[in-house]
Length: 218
Image (cartoon, rainbow, N blue to C red):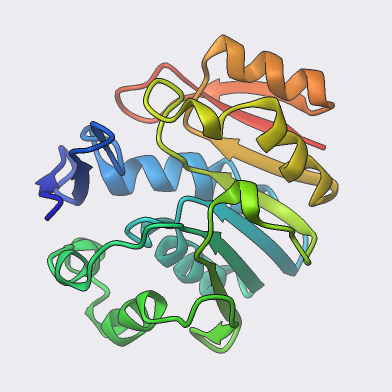
């Protein structure tokens, strides 16, 4: 079983021994997710109805924080998440996100997220719906268009096939005009690939432990 690791902000990440990488930053899982995806992504969207695509659902932390923020901002969210290899229920039960966020009342919603039947929309709250795409990204033909993309795959050093031009072209084609993509990775090669496809790329200050992150707009 993949080990659950305590990060510097007190929240958990999970280590993938085969890939040799963590699902979230060991400098702080919640801090990283908030910084990269909520502050640099969701909070920058002026729309009241937002279609989100996440590449790498993993622990569900990014979705959890998004649904919490959507309730505060009074936004309606349609959240599609790509995850070819879901985490085992035994691991999900160990994660301390609700405790760290002091949101024990969301336990049922968090469990519901991870029990969503692949390929079908599930209402997580009044304003938020979730659909898990349990396939490899390369095999998916997107039916929806997205305003916001959370690109949270394992890094290019361990999963280079997820960071190629073919992947980003597929995502670009599935995005609405003026859509945003955010990712923790700020490697030069990734930024050059995004620009080549047609994204406008910004380098932003990164979360704790990282100098930079990237936000790209269509």
